[in-house]
Length: 436
Ligand SMILES: Nc1nc2c(c(=O)[nH]1)N[C@H]1C(S)=C(S)[C@@H](COP(=O)(O)O)O[C@H]1N2
Ligand SMILES: [Mo]
Image (tube, rainbow, N blue to C red; front, side, top):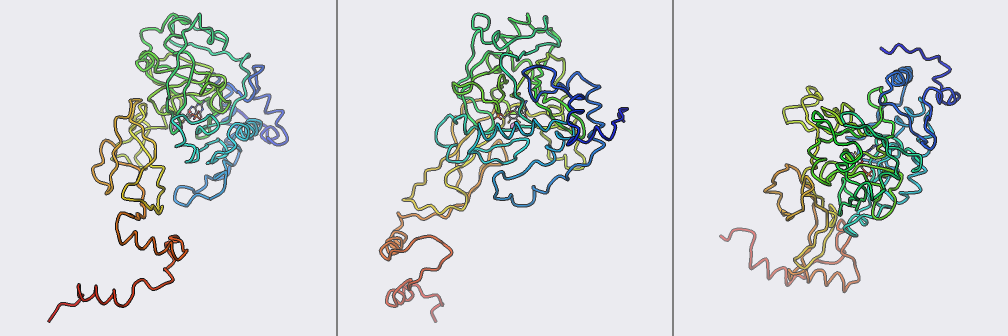
């Protein structure tokens, strides 16, 4: 495979981080935690050779076993080791420091690459999720880039390739501002502000060439896939960008500078598409004739028909998910919750209509029938206690007068459930044995 020979001393990341840093240097002042991999085939080959010479922790079994009740829930040993093997441990450390600073209260589903979940209570508080609680999905570490040192390169099939500073992009006399009203990426809703990509392509690049059909977004984070190293890269079709403000280059989230973990200083926001297309820390945009060959675009986030199973799956028999499908979840009541109500239960949750369209209605089914469009929906089981039923109300009142609790359900009531007179009266009225 790779023709690079790596001297053993240079593969030891713990004692020779310095040497590895020379292989994969931080070349741009003010761009900490950034290694440029795309367009650097030689560098990629060295990295693959180093990874191949190492052993890494096995993938843990988590799909068919219950998740641990710890926080962080899962530890990303393997991805930390990949970074360490290339002398990039500083990225791992900075990412966790950023989590503790920007996302202290989250459910830390995976510590590295960081995946953070919003607690239920925050998810239903308001239409907008505060930046502190907005969910996070990372495929690599968090780069630490100074806004003043940052440049966005736009190239590929454009009339003029350009490099833009954040000052250029924020100059409202050059580029008209764009704002996306509450905009949902994954399970989080925020208002993003920036400039529509369409305007930047037109004004700064003089437009794209006729053969350009896709826009590729490259993020400054380092991404590993099957022994090879990349920067995060995805693409969206030009027709999506052309639709006025559906694709935004954003630097503001809910009226505040984009947090580092959400892509500071600049990210893409593709409304209506799955979150994966909204590249964070975007430093390069290429106009292409075909979709990005980056593994996130071509090998992940694929839909398959039901004929495709685990052992006949290929990348080319799936297709990239772009539009976000219809989805919803019930947040209240929770699964297996005991709900005492008067015949009406108010449900809380979130719903997403698909493709960025407004939600017209939400349908709830008590019996699981009549699913439509998608074949899955969120199901919960509840233990329903309806106080509009006289017998239920009576039993509840009795429990209360005796100073007992309805819960736990698993405990039998300590007193006799019925007097002998009542029992006989009812049993004689409805005998269980057939009369002779
Ligand atoms: N550079 C880069 N951009 C990225 C990712 C990433 O790992 N690296 N993750 C993507 C995915 S899968 C999602 S769902 C969204 C999540 O955005 P958030 O973390 O700001 O909520 O970012 C997308 N953009
Ligand atoms: Mo995602």
